[in-house]
Image 1 (cartoon, rainbow, N blue to C red):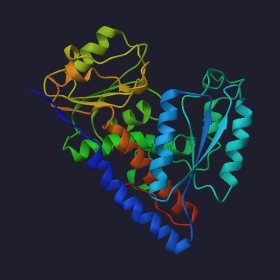
Image 2 (image 1 turned 90 degrees about the vertical axis):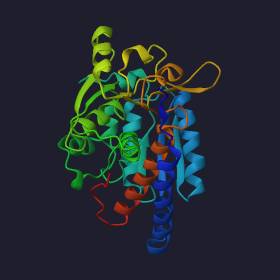
Image 3 (image 1 turned 60 degrees about the vertical axis):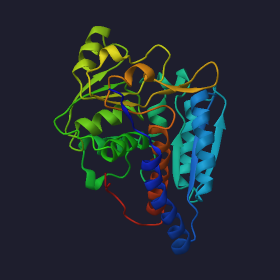
Image 4 (image 1 turned 60 degrees about the horizontal axis):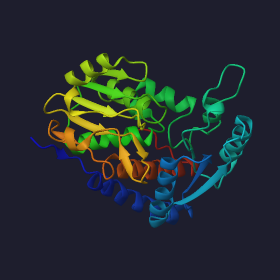
Length: 308
């Protein structure tokens, strides 16, 4: 058996075609050019690659991307004030926080301001990555017809599964990783009313034996780790499974790589996303879609709800 590669380009192309038409429509009806502002803190190689790709690809279809960069020593209070100002700025339609944030912001406590305080300063109609209190509550409730924003990576995974004909209802799914814009929302999407799967969640405190038992029993495995300490191998998968590789990082040679041992897993899985050319292009396209949604909200339209 050799897995069918789940190439992201045809999925992304269909989304981008619609986004292009929407950008033209916004210009004609309101005289608006959609603008995404990215708040980037410090230097993370994979995040910088993602940002560079966004700037180039968004410009091609008429969406402006404006980075706001800060040194890694910046305080949470400064970021909160910045995001609050951007939320009030009528020229800014979408706001995105580049992750990961420095440890002094990631590791917040009751006494210290942190990343969730920053996320919650994003206006609900500008929260294109779905990280604010409002967006996460909507996702938790799973009311598809009322959702303001779905996180772009989780939306991309859902679109990939649908395009390649992978049913999730009643299936056994393992999600590996629990960060705020990949593992958490993917878990809720697939295990909630949108996916109706039975989902197990693995993370750094999951014993290896437990992880391996779960992935061997899974119909679908989604990895969202992005760390050299983790690699999904063929010997912990069942034959004919679907493997979605979301976690990415840049190796010492400057190559973008994923969580999955592609050369080994391709002989076990039925469907497998490569890195690059897999989920990444679809994530970018879904973010474009969310920026257009945000622009419509800012123009006074009510575009709540998603068609998956």
